Image 1 (cartoon, rainbow, N blue to C red):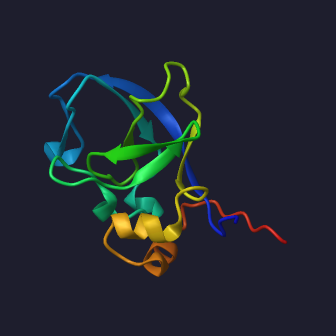
Image 2 (image 1 turned 135 degrees about the vertical axis):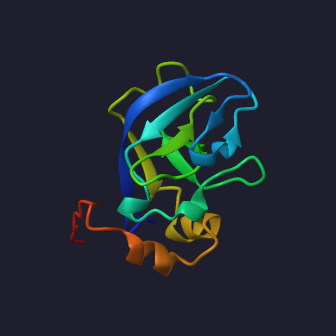
Image 3 (image 1 turned 180 degrees about the horizontal axis):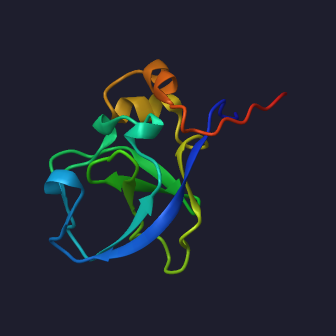
Length: 137
């Protein structure tokens, strides 16, 4: 079954994060191991819910990067979010690649559940900054 909506964001940076370093505003997520973090150019100004952020006490949403599910880490900010790509093979992800936040394996309802809401709210929040492609069929 194909998704009716797909939301992707470009990976603008890949950072090495040492064990015990924190990610995001308020230092809400702490790396439990040496990690690789992809910075994705999407945030709450694009309609993503900050409630889908991850902290040390609770998991957040996920993204599909290089065909694999990867956790969102830290707080979703206005224009950026971070994804833990540590478990992907070295070189599997580069700056300029895309991360999928809605679509494919990530249904609207799953994205909504990670943010503690319903799918309709996720859909209605997708902002004017999102580029819309309408497909027939």
